Length: 487
Image (tube, rainbow, N blue to C red; front, side):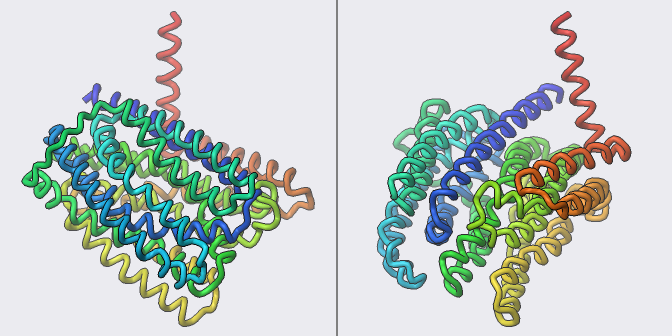
């Protein structure tokens, strides 16, 4: 058990480095590109990304999670899944290639036909990436993911900036997105010990698919649902509005991808290994939820409070219309640790059937909320706000099964989250008050950030919530270990 905890801890560190390091660099890259390009370019890219992402679900999801969760996986399984995924990628690429002119016509963006066909080439390296990531996740060897993603963002970022400066416009974003996937695939091919053979065991594929198809359908429903607002805004409004919407969503999404993505990537294989011990799974899930929330809640609350000066300083005033969308998604994404931890626990216990049922239930009332917003309000902000409402309801829905599966009820979860939530609300109020000062945006932004961090730290020292105590204990152990080595 001690060795297992060390492996999980080491994996978490590398995953956090990969998430924060790579996404941090990607965040800087997006700032640079956003200052060069127009909102309309990002609106057009958003439409193309929706269709490539939907296609990628068939390749990246289902089999990938089945390989991670399954107790006994052989090299033959990896090869079999790869060849099936590659065939699926070929079929999906043909569909996108043929339908590109129709997509461009529906959104009144005839100029995206060829860029979409080029961007869809990412499906082919995605087939290999899916298998490589599954092997890395099973081994908790996220150092290799860090190295490959770092190489991907450096190469693709440099290419994107050069093309944008040369006046490439939308092609700069297409090249940057496609190159990132290709470079990651190439680097991982050299670092991950995976011997793919020309073999396909259909019996094993069928066995893995028996578990994975439910997750595949769940992922497809979730991806379509998450992109549904962009699809609607793209049709009902223009590409500039869609660009503002997606830019506002992107800021908090970077944060949630960094923290929540790191925690969940490690926790699924870790909890799956302990699926026969419900008490152990509950403890791991509890720590995952409380620590994630302790980090994410204040960041999201602070980001919403400093949204206006942040956008003005980083992206220039031409992007200020994205601020309301950013604030809505800050509060919406803040609850993602609760969702993800509950869903990962359900997957770890091998109940993909429950996972699928939950997705159908959540997306049903989510679509209903979107239809109401379209009928009652002629506003893209109202469309975005439906995500916040349904996210809060989904906290109850996702938590319900785990009361029976591992004995961790919704009220226990809320009790664990309450200290971090209250401290974040107090911090947000103080930061908003500071934001009323008559200062330049750059000075105001720095003052708000410093004030927010100070308030949250002071409240943590006074209240001493459980995740704060856990982190302090980990820091003390780390320092004591270093002192012992020096002695």
